[in-house]
Image (cartoon, helix red, strand yellow):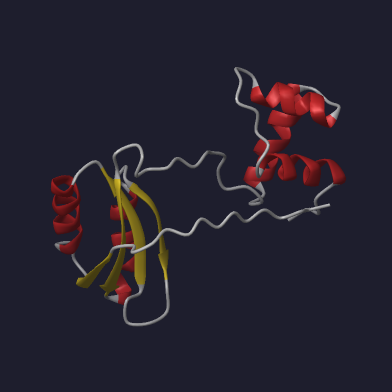
Length: 152
């Protein structure tokens, strides 16, 4: 991986919390950075290809939008972790999944519009080859953590 330039750091700092809500957000960011939209877009592509950037998106309050969120812990046979993770990734409501050490070794979050949809998806995932057990973990209280890294 190449080292980040001062421009890259300033760009990544903006992406963490100052993306303008307008028809051309990258053009507006470019003006803030003293450059043009094409330069910003090209650099973002390069930073993504180099692994510095996974995605650009926003966070919504899923509960206020009518969705229910569930954290799920799976006990998966080690030989099936990759295939189960790929299957989970195909569900639009699976926001992410990750492998962990311990008995329950694959965790994911799921957003669904109702309990019926959640139950159907979780039953499908529970039936996947290699899935040995499932824990559905509901949140009792929501804590919002806003992590931003000052790169300069």
